[in-house]
Image (cartoon, rainbow, N blue to C red; front, top):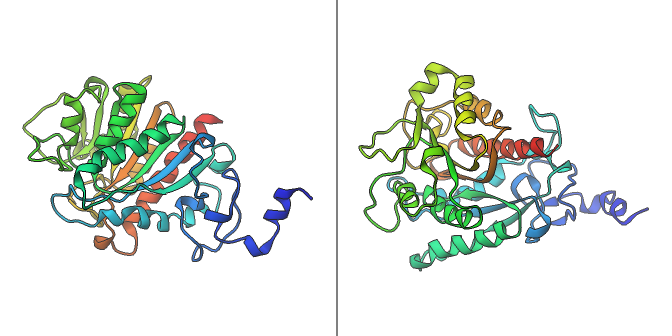
Length: 322
């Protein structure tokens, strides 16, 4: 019997696969209610250069403008992902890890008592992963974390095309160093984002500043339907190097109550998933999902939606590789 077969047939280790699993392309049965919770039960590892996707948590919410708590988001989203690790993925019907090596490298270390180190800390830690050749999948944290993540991706790929799902444009004028409603204007001014090829989806708040990014508002999505939205996204971003930034508040508060700045009139979970699952033609080089605030969540509604969105992005990447 080979070494692998001995390991995976030994009942004494068929639990806690997040730290006992030696192969990121394998998974085994584990009760959903037990064990250590990495994202999708992927093995905890820092072997970036042998991974296709590296999952990280970025537990920072020092830039929130209303309700805090999304520093607890990475932990909650990992916990909510356990059922998604149990069966072949729906609606794809495959095991994405048979074609993708996905690891969870834990949370970035950030010192909240030294705010001057936050931007450089996220930038340097994310640059190490991107420089290894792996795709970075970040779980926030508030939306400000996208700024240093964009800096790291732009360093590696040049100015990126931003695909932003959000209730807010986040291009208001900055009133200070840390503000989760201003970082995309800052990124534009620094040349990190290619404005003409970028798009914001689900917007339903007003900003007098027009930075030139194409927008599809929530009311427009409700009126035109998801198929038409998907066509517009693909036409606008096909052939570009796309950075996908997903603020969970793009969902209506009925589907994502656990967030810092909820806005009524948003998208339903099914609308978002239908759009996301259709993005197979896009070259998405990096992804973050932000603003899950567990203290304001109910029955893990928001965390489950977030985990499903991230899971489906991984399946999308697996589809592209098959």
